[in-house]
Length: 112
Length: 115
View (cartoon, chains in turn green, red):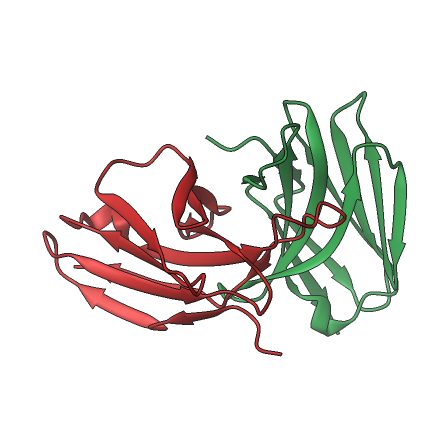
């Protein structure tokens, strides 16, 4: 079974708009990571946020983490056609050890 | 600097057969994890190898086994293949000694189809 749940399962927006994806998880974590996957290929690491951090930025990406609600959000600003992909959150348990538990992902489509 | 590499890219097998998938970690990494991703699902953790030993295992049957070599590369073996084993198999590498970053870097995956 998977710990995380992404919401929405699918999102379609116009190029230039912002895209927000949410992730919820069930158990205490060491960190939370977001990955992108294009057309069933390998996962590309986007950003990692630790359990003692609340917000992190990387380029057009902004990630927030609320450990009290066991939830995270990924915001992509000024979306581009190349952002079309599936986005997954993955959590690393409190003991570390780097076993990642993934959600089912959000399928993002950017329309030109 | 080569990233994580996996071979083969695609593989077609029939039920009951055995398969071996291979992974070379990113340079400087010492830990390899394997994940199975069914169509439309998120990846699921199979197991992790460090110092040539299985360190953690997910909820997968004993038909799934692995190995890590002294050069940190790894193999995933699946015996007695079932139709349900059809999936994308992903390898990820990391450096366990550096807790300043827990990022795992993924390879392109091996697409296994069981007929």
